[in-house]
Image (cartoon, rainbow, N blue to C red; front, side, top):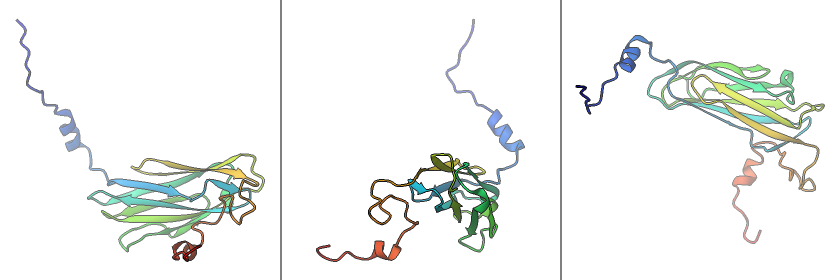
Length: 179
């Protein structure tokens, strides 16, 4: 006679593995990427903003942050700078070429990188893509369609290729009645 039980069986393997393996040093990190553009002109330099935030309750140490640039970018002309946000955040001051940095983030802290990415004037591609990755975070990509002109080119920056973030004072100014 075979007996079956309806009681749930305890699975000891996860608990055993957790006790044997070292705790992760990556915390819970969230990555964002934005260059505020859908289009770019050949020869234009775009400014992308990368932010890595530690949303976990433990420090995230030794997090590798890197960017991969498609051939449309002039990687040799690219540079980046890190803004640590607080004195407890550790990141490189900046560098040339594609982003390659290592960061330490206390719980709740973030680091922000500004990437200056020139589009090659002689690019053969029709899009320029930057892909950013960080240890423990989901990689992100941002793609811009390369244009010579686009509808709206008769209006200053109407083609969507204006510098980012644009005229902040103008964007924040209250509108005049009747305008």
